[in-house]
Image 1: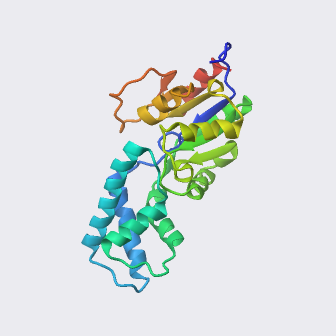
Image 2: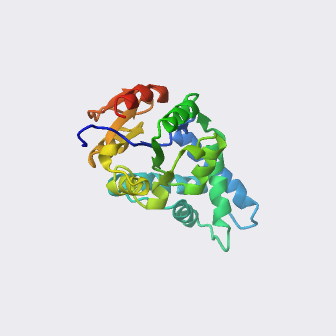
Image 3: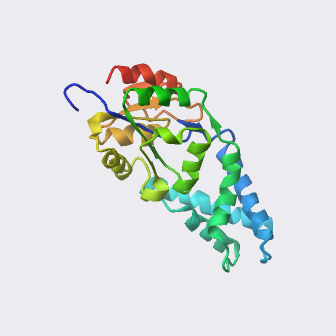
Length: 247
């Protein structure tokens, strides 16, 4: 850590930190996405299995994937999971537009995203302090989807870069995604603070590289793992006095 401890940048997780993605459970959202994909495919004219089989196949693929990626920290692109789900369900894609299917699958999730009422204000104030800002987030969904989300809520212009595990191929807490962010900002680990809502991914992960971490409390998280943080906040606005102490 630098002798004066001064920071020059802030790295933000996205989901449940900058934007709320969990206004419904992921189990429910998976169901909505699978149903939307099924209805989309019905219009393709291709023969479909019964919905029960289709849904079971996709849920199995997702369940297996989350177990695997939790261990390996390797991130597969959405199209890989969609193709595997279709294969398990016995559906022949035959020239199917997978980009369009991906957007159909994501739309039910996007429909329920909401903003935090202090996000815009906090980003404006941090930018006003000449700090460089970036997003570093785990997601199976393509980067362009999330850039659109950030744009929708007026947050995109504040970030020098935005990195997502779907593009990097590695999930937090793997060091590669943090290292890429530091490289993009031309900053050293001791010159940034990371803020996110998960202990393993957003606190322990960056700390292993020497990045100071702030935990943003979320009621749906399990924090029993425990870790010493630079600070714990309940909203983004509470990040401001923490930053003031380190600039």
